[in-house]
Image 1 (tube, rainbow, N blue to C red):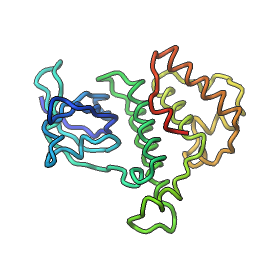
Image 2 (cartoon, rainbow, N blue to C red):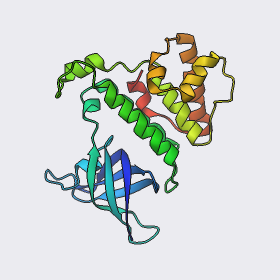
Image 3 (spheres, one colour):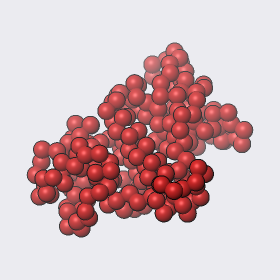
Length: 227
């Protein structure tokens, strides 16, 4: 069976000498573990489509319903180039991908989560596109415009959990009601514009950490690299 879908690469890992197993989160087919043949070679034809934090239009072949899909072609739609010029933005993008991966079972479509992840990555890409930068900005230029704000990753986690059916939107955790509302439904620019509140951030971090560890039995490895 051959099928096509747009997807975002959440992670990849080596397979044998020249191949990769790539976790692709597709909009219509959900999270897939996909074999990419020969992409670790210097001239691997599908190499770009297998890179983490990239978006593509993929063509997959699956021999049977229980087999591992193989990527047989596709087109790269975005590698989020400005995100890759800033370590802060890239780490945040990887964190978003890990959150989605940890709360998403295989083969269960979730267009809401897909749209959330894509919108968040596009926001990070826009943060690397500050006014006054050249069309091909240097890493230093991007870093100077790459302010993410302390609430962004928390808002993403809350929205991802909402989309997965674990939402806290109607739970009182002691945060200001306006802040709580913006974190769940405000624009990313509104989230970024919220004033920092160390006590509230600590409360939210503790709640999310306990939920992932106690309810999902998961640890987010990218947390140590993001603010």
